[in-house]
Image (cartoon, rainbow, N blue to C red; front, top):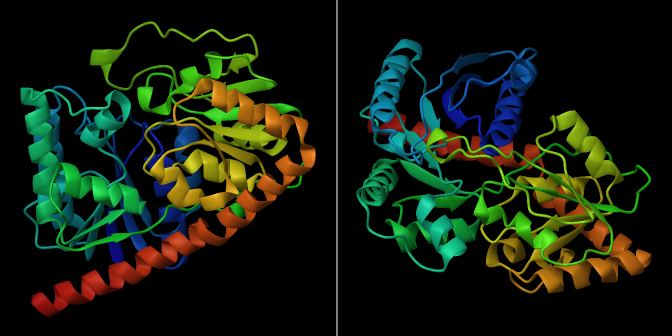
Length: 368
């Protein structure tokens, strides 16, 4: 089988693509991988060097949610159409909505990782104003969903958001994201600190909760401070917090080390269609303290310790409870670890996608 996969390099989709492409290549699938956004650095691309059957095509086309991206979207669509004619894939696995409407005679699977409208409602509590940009974005997403052969979301909650804000996909399913447990160290001795991962420029990550109250333990915050859309870039303003240490972005190897030693992971997001960082923390046997939002309950069930939605004082109280009760903290850590290993492994994710690929390719052949 030959699959053309699109990805972007400015968020969690790149880590998702790494797990997916690696698993597919090791199972003998031929992959053409196209990246959008910023051209990845050597460190970001290192994992591709040892993979057979992967043809990587990096580009710097703007992403569909960025301001003034219209010309880049048109150019990137033309580029993809030409690439489809060149490499002749059996299936397109598209991690952006816009390309669901590509005029090509190949089955198109669109994966809905997140979207602007559901993000806006989660962050601001109401729909965005009906500006020309919002109208254009809504049209892009609706058209991509309606013209895709099939749509996948990483959670039931995210799938519901598509129907609420755009259009119900004709064929839709949920495939939970996955990570490779062997990349993480669940057996390292724990130290008395908490970690949280999130982009400081993204209000949906709600990292300010960590500095809005007095925390009971040292807290490390890892994440980009620079907005990928130049239209919104400014000098980053770090929230103040006496026990919070802002570390900026860290390479995956260093982040895995930090996870392995952390006792607790704080999942503060008010908007999180899935959340790979909590999975990485759980695979490192961290206890998960999570915001009380529907998607976290769907993913983690009773294996996480929840704090009142968007409430900094409740977050601090939950942290203090786990900080003071080591046995309770270890029980939560073990529960989260077992949940992540069972439900959110990369092997399970790749197997689910391969099963779906097979049905779409067979249906495409039958319809030809």
